[in-house]
Image (tube, rainbow, N blue to C red):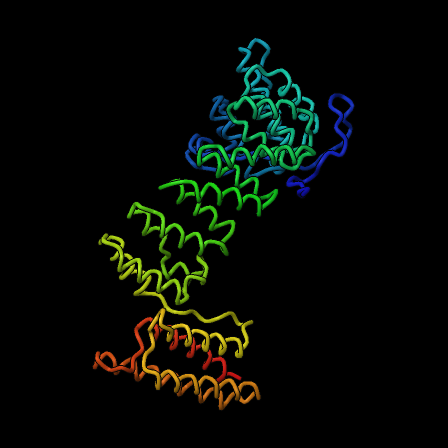
Length: 421
């Protein structure tokens, strides 16, 4: 279960203080600019502007400019940044001293100054403010220094502010099993925002377990919370989303949420949602949902949305022509059954069966030309009967619109393949 370290290096031995001799040219930890940093410099991150803001020595603006200077220009401006970093004077108030001392060493560590590790350790040990401590412990963890795990454990147990930051920082530590246990508890018992935060991190440890925990929350939640867990599960476990969709549509009671569970066909076309929804069983499910619903919102969304726009999509190129034909045969049997009744008249069904079976015999002998001819005739017959039914609604021989889509498009894709052989 051990994860690969995220950072550029990991200290194999932790020895804090004057005895550290290693020379690091790369960052000891990260810095991440925020919107406030950019706003302070009017979103102008040009080198000239950032250096100007630093030299103006306006405290907050100067710090924001230093962060952006380091982030965007890095080692190129290392000497300038270090020269303009100011160590807080001793007569500064206690909170302000430690806050500025943390910033001073955060920047030095980002620029690869190894002495910043020992200085940051003193912040973790002696800073009076818990938030500053947590930031310092997190930075140390990024550098591979994990000596403050008791404080991590304490922060979690007492529910201190920013404890999640510590769990994230320690995810690659020797304590990752315990961190994993904490994250499981958070996913199971916390508010939705915190649970989803923890799930993002825990999925790096154990994706299957994360899915299991989120599914439990999904099936035992309601309303918007259930939908939020559903959305995250779609990212982590797309192959299981079809069954969750059907369950949600059967159990959700709020109409504005019900329609959000019905996938848009364009999402499927764009590869954002699984093609598993384009199957006769799901179309039939939506038809029944449409028929049983009294909500105009739901009925309109189904009729003018998925049912109107969907069509079978071409199979993956790795799918063989024989598999495509067998799939078409299966679909034909399925939609002709009493469950669907999308295909009618025994003689017509038998005629389609014969054409498909003839095509299969030709394909078994690698006779692609004759197989293609049978499939072409199959398409012509399906299309003709479908169009005739539009004129004469009482004809016993028929193909419904949904039946036509599944037979026509899947046969067309197969014919295109056979014609290219």
